[in-house]
Length: 226
Image (tube, rainbow, N blue to C red; front, top):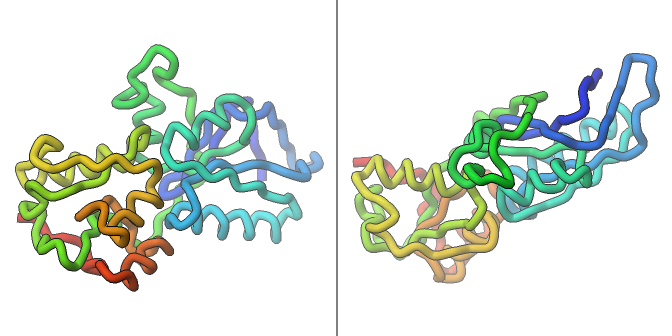
């Protein structure tokens, strides 16, 4: 395994990499004893994927991996940009936005970032869409109108995907009650706690299995459009 250059980061689901510590590895060079990956918070499928990859890297190379969880996309890039972490496990939406200075990154302090993709990861058994409470009577995307929908400040990939999903049903954020959540994991837990009717979710997230077993439950499938 070879790494060249100064600014790298990992992103999963689509893995990317930006400015981290200056690390130069060559075939004959000694690998570092410890590297740090920033990722989503505990309970998300991204954290689970990161932990599995870290375990595989450790077994293959002997390097120890420190996983640094964060609740939103900014929190996954800040440690890498500041040199605290070597890699960031990101979703494609946020990685693209960060690389081009779009949406939440369209600010002077951010702007386009020199990101590099080093590993794409696709989970064929993972479904990512809107999860809802079983008692919310939401059967199609149009039924989201007037319902409580979570929004994660700084969570570009979550919010943009939710916005696009609402648009598919001819809705906008103005047509729903926006419920702020501090992290992706928490936003899904809000379903079980009765604080929201719908949240962007992954069918393979450990927290969604908890939601499914909660009193409110979850639909356990993607909401069809129309």
